[in-house]
Length: 187
Image 1 (spheres, one colour):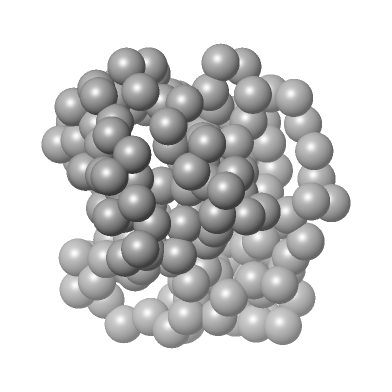
Image 2 (cartoon, rainbow, N blue to C red; image 1 turned 45 degrees about the horizontal axis):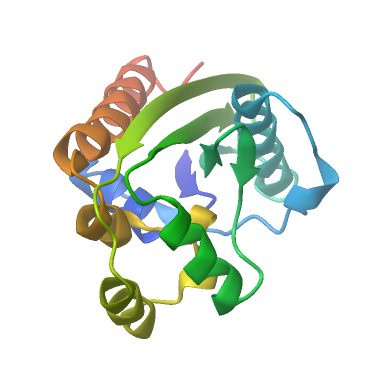
């Protein structure tokens, strides 16, 4: 049975690589805007499940792993910014604030139709953010590709608790993936 990562995310590929298993990447073409929910955890779960099922319509005998990550800032869900100007404003607004990162993951057996899903929230704490730091980050990375305009390199650059927030989701997902793969691929 194949294992498929339904994501182009570099950080999700790192997690899969850390498991030392063979997998292939087939990105989901699911329209994320077609699902809305005011509850961030529910939204992360629904999007992760929908992405896995979408890939599962084409791959009939596979374990499909998908995820969705976004941020909640002052009660508002922050997805990918539409423009660089919007990204800059987002990043600057985090100065000396906290941002909740919501990470969802779904693991789907397209043969048995069994689904497992997980959602976790993590708090990113920010310190001082200068305009020159923002400019340097934005010149290096395609910020409009990242939820809340931040990928793991942005979180590392701007947060004061990077190690804590990055280790938790990776450990959670690796542990859950190991459990499921050990259980004979969800048979």
